Image (cartoon, rainbow, N blue to C red; front, side, top):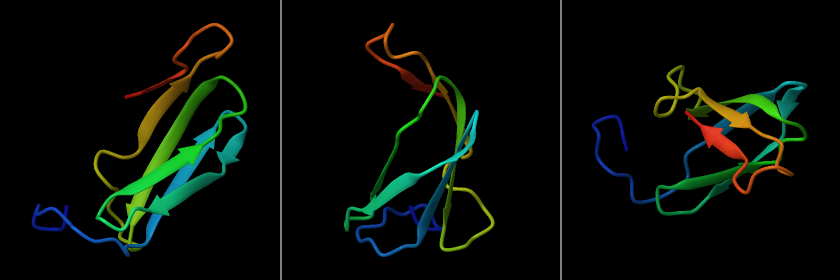
Length: 85
């Protein structure tokens, strides 16, 4: 969405993601899908609470309701290991 709440139909924005876990920063790969959406992924190394913060175009405001908290469980015990709130 742009500043007026309208859908954005093209990419090119400067999205940044910062993921911080129990041991500090975790690398996060971001992809511009070229249609106004962006994808990201990171690989937690251990269980714990991770904070995912998103910004765009060096603006001071966060994207959406960021920062998001994600609880990563021991994946050897569960089929679904990440829960974000």
